[in-house]
Amino acid sequence: MSEYQGCELPDDLYYDLDYVWVRPEGAGLFTIGVTDPAQTMSGRVQKARIKKLGVHLEARRHVATLESGKWAGGVPVPFDCTVVARNEAVLEDPHLINVAPYSDAWIARLRPDDPAHALERLSTGAAALDALKRWIDRYQVQCLRCSD
Image (cartoon, rainbow, N blue to C red):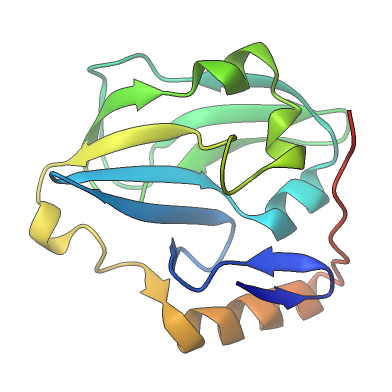
């Protein structure tokens, strides 16, 4: 796990280099969530809506909408996919995103239409971490973990 400006940046994830992370889960499934810098910029998340199971989404469509006191925005999927699971814990307690963005606060599990090419628009490894650090610098983010 890398850290920069207080932001956790797991090296084993794939990133859209804006605010979404993706983790391959095996059996052709992928988990999607929001990065630590993104949750910090959004402020305390107060509301979450996640698409229902079975919904098909085209790349860049929103699988979820998050709202805080100062921001509302969607969580875009990086590939055409179907929602196969959604995190009920986040629906019940959206603030969980501010506390555990990479573990307990995943947003949804997705089955891509084309699993072999699902990660093509995403970055990982050192190149992704360097790009995320530039993003953090550009927006002058200092990550914080909101407490309950």
